[in-house]
Length: 286
Image (cartoon, rainbow, N blue to C red; front, side, top):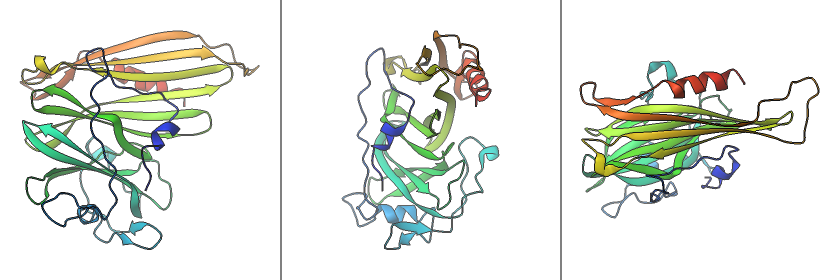
């Protein structure tokens, strides 16, 4: 089991803001597999994990299993992950949220693989825990090797409705890669709002980093408030120089996209394709 210290290892600096000020931090917890889920019974997080990996068990050297129940990827069939063959606990994280005015438990199982894969398996599961835990929905939200909640995992967009913020990442000695996800719950089903792909690099005289911030005012929710997404892309100089490369353009640019609720479509819709264009620009730099 790892804890939230993993966030320190991510090279990108990513933060969350709500209405121009830091949002209230959600109480994300990192329970042990044998911890009880609620005070109403003896169900453990290991029991919940067996919904998805039926043969997972304590091997004496951690938890591992080889079978996986197939569930949908939240971004659709093209993201279906068939590479992973062994599953253990890389992380378990939980947080209580509001969905359509109801209290719901979210549990994120970030399953580790014996052999590293480009896209990890990260199951986000939604439960009703009014009595014994009842699984309402689950989806794979893994877009990269490791997936976890933001330190501030929830953003209210209406009275009694939160948006879930997660991120998937990996990094090497000079580059970092993050896929940021916004997820909502409607009728006790998990739905992807959108993703943003961020990139960082530090080499050849250049330090380029991207940060992302969110803002929503839940009092404007009709039924859901607009969500403003801001990405700051900053390039600065460092001492290291590569003689074969021309100097990079230094400076800072800001990318702003606002998502508004489209009642006819039944989903959030962005007011531009700027986030998509940023992803394509970042991919060209890999």
